[in-house]
Amino acid sequence: MSVVERVLHNGRIWTQNPDFPRVSALALIGERIVAAGSDHDMLALAGLNTARDDLGGAYVIPGLTDAHVHWAMTSCALQEVNLFELPSKEEALARVAERVQASAAGEWITGYGWSQDFWPEPQFPTAAELDRVAPANPVYLHAKSGHAAWVNSAAMRSCGLNSDTPDPEGGFVGRDSTGQPDGMLYETAMDLVSERIPKPDPEKLAGLMSTAQQSALAAGLTGLHDFDGPDCLQALQILRERGELGLRVTKQINCEWFDHALRSGLRSGFGDDWLRIGAQKIFADGALGARTALMLAPYEGEPDNLGVAVVEREEMQALVSRASADGFATSIHAIGDRAVHDVLDVFEIARKEEAGRGQAPTDLRHRIEHVQIIHPGDVFRLASLGLVASMQPLHATSDYLAAERGWGERVRWSYNIRAQLDLGARVALGSDSPVEPIEPLKSFYAAITRRRPDGSPGPEGWLPELRLTPEETLQGFTLGPAWATNMDERLGRLAPGYLADLVLLDRDLLACDPEELPETQVLGTMVGGTWRYRAP
Image (tube, rainbow, N blue to C red; front, side):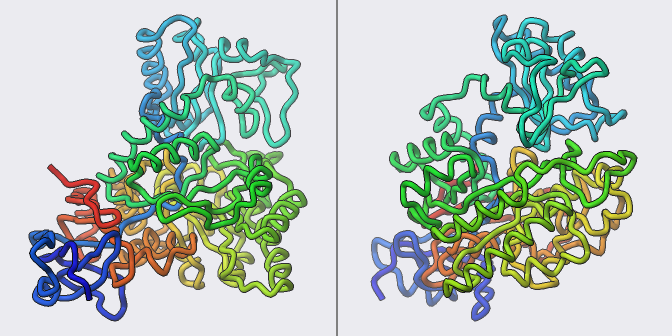
């Protein structure tokens, strides 16, 4: 073996390599690990110019990948009004009023993160309420779910939105008893206003991403799977060209731009270990918060509401089959049990078509995003079809009250990562940022305890039988995302031949009391053999 370039020693390293699960040292050449073992053996490989990093007995885990992020939205949220899970509508309005005071008349005000489910009266807000604090500035506030928006009259006037505006396919405009828009936009109706809001150019977006990247690295992330549009890809390319991209990014392509990708001859996996093309992305339905998740039976107390099909099943089938034939995996957002059922039917047909072409189920690693509620008759089908269950532990703890109100007794089949693991499905965990914080250790706490940071709903957590073990949660943020993007032979473990992506912690995530998890400190984050973050 050549003289190694760097040795990390005096650590407590959890490798996820079944042959040597615990070691104290790693030897690196370039971006990769070339050996793992004892301090004595690894330091014996060092030469005069080898960097020696004493980890001081800190705990080390493989680098964490967030398998579902809206990275452009997350980066832009840094300059928006933060309404995340505020406890009242009045506080949300006060924050908007504060931003209005600091803005010029006519300047757009944007914000994110509100949810009526956290308010004393969980009712959707209105334009009239926003008008009182922002009469001259157009305001657009997207909900925590990302599937609804709250706008004021100035925003609607600027976009020509009125009683004569038809509902777009896959969405609808909230209206009062006279048919006038009431300030709520659902699903694709959000585009009626959002497309008029000035967007940052790629250079500015790249700058915002640089700032967001530092926060992600400090939280222990080494990679992410993005679900935003072409502007996100442009900005990521700028960072990559400058050598400033410090996270490994898999970029999904939303179906409205997918034709361009096919005409360019792209396929899943194109790119390198820093920035690569992932899957086609389709929306099957909406979200629980907006009451637009597509359901087999109506929402509790809403006998006429079955949710919204954003893309109808027949169109989904055509999109998936075409993508599969051209070498593209597909990732489909499905939250309601009807949406999940339809998506499973679509993928079942696609798998038969692939088998007819001589393809193995592992060739194209199709995914279902969220799987927030599933019919018990469908629970086993993700595993049997070789699909990835891309799920978010924080959604369970954030949404449990809304789920109980909306789904009643059906909640036992909701947010059930446990069932997918027990049945052998591949599970990739994430945050859905900015819907939830892009801080994986918060997701660890939610997955292991099924509780919010304040301890609710109680010591045992919500549906405690669905809790995950620390090992399962770690695998969900490492091995699961690596497998989902065909990178499992070089990501997710700390073993020879694998990329040197790792996180340094002040305690053992796999053995500490779960109550200690919120206090866990990230001491360092290494990506590709380079320290991208070290704690002060």
